[in-house]
View 1 (tube, rainbow, N blue to C red):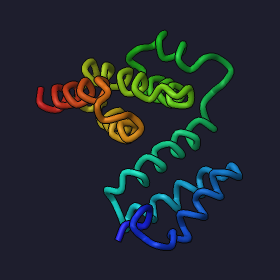
View 2 (tube, rainbow, N blue to C red; view 1 turned 90 degrees about the vertical axis):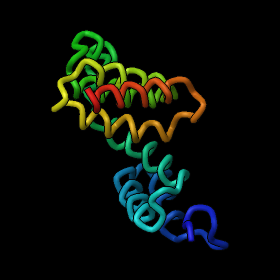
View 3 (cartoon, one colour; view 1 turned 60 degrees about the horizontal axis):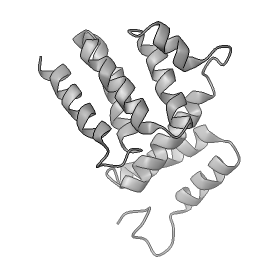
Length: 148
């Protein structure tokens, strides 16, 4: 049974995760979503919630002394800067742009450097509407990077 949508009574962990988000305890919420995902690993609502709150956790550690997107633009092959820029784009409610940024990067990275970017793309894809063209571009770019 899916804890997020099929249960007549919401799973207490889901309610606790929502409360943790509301009170700014994002790390606690992520941990609860991870527990819930062990019971329902493909639940789209849980995957989306986990991805969105994970961005909030990472955003707490992004250097705000300068624009993270500008830093990434100035160093286009720097993976950590690109990951920060993608998270900032999600915070600006532009998850498709975040996916596009990272999937374009994947095409130019050495094969050994692709894994963390690929993982982030897959996470952020849960925040993008499936019919958005960024989804197809990301899939194509990931496939090219994987099989070249």
